[in-house]
Length: 444
Image (tube, rainbow, N blue to C red; front, side, top):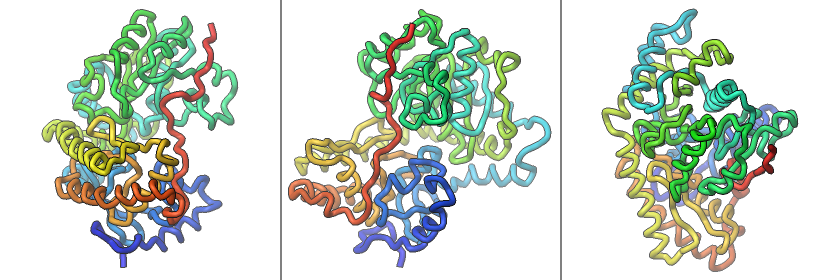
């Protein structure tokens, strides 16, 4: 029998998941289209691998097991799975068509909504993935400044200019690698040491999980302005979630360009490039940024309703309120158990559970917690990616399970049986890094 969201006595059956996985081996590189969704980020042998249904904040795998989902599609499900108003908008548009031979009115209607809520959105362009629009922003910045070098802080996609600074940079010409540099978040000296007169753009995630300290974001913005550097906010995670106008509204900083995806269309593929007119106008003649599916109408219909719901329901406030309960609840349980080596941190709309290596291998601790959370019907990978469908019942149940699972972790740490307790292959290191990765020396 499949497991449900309850105190299950056994781990979920995953026979069909494993059958599909075996069919994918040797056919699909890495067997996944998105690394964070792949088997390396879950305890292999315990966690399901394929999901087939979602409703609200819950998902079902191919074997029929039900889970509360705190990953939410790795970000896009801001309202929840199969959200009625969004689904209805998609169905209505589907009756008329998906992609057309000329422009569609929704391109204008959605742009007008975005212009009214995002501070820097004097002009707007669409695409399909976050990588598309961050790369377009970089191209615009180079065109606008006549410079070549890019400084970055965070994760910005799979294209050459970004991946050249990571360990997965095979296949990228050295000439491109030599133009990309990194700096550390909340380390203004790291930033200043990388700046020179050939910097076209600074692109960063305004926040990941750390809060900006010592006026870090404002100081970066001021330096960019004084040196004529284009400042780009990568708001894939913060847009429409931290506040309605994103991080730039939340922190009262207006970047030159900003990029969005994930939360804006509640799971439909849409990305947005927004920015100041003097830079964005270069996309009319100077640079080429056009895609066949940029004006695809189903995603725009979904975005229109999603943004309207986010505004009308004040979704960022809801995510903050419910996420705070989870974060503080987790930390209270850990404190009562005297487990000072684990904590939940980050902005309430999206928090992370971390483990200190002083108590053992953090990945093994994460794996054990994940294993036990999955047993009891919670799809968990160390994050609370909140959506509007997460309700009090979900949150209260999750905290009850933490009260069961954290003592198991504590016992494993104290008896040095972490590895023994894990019933499959542990979670593997994640590719995503936001600091201390390949910071190159200054080239002047």
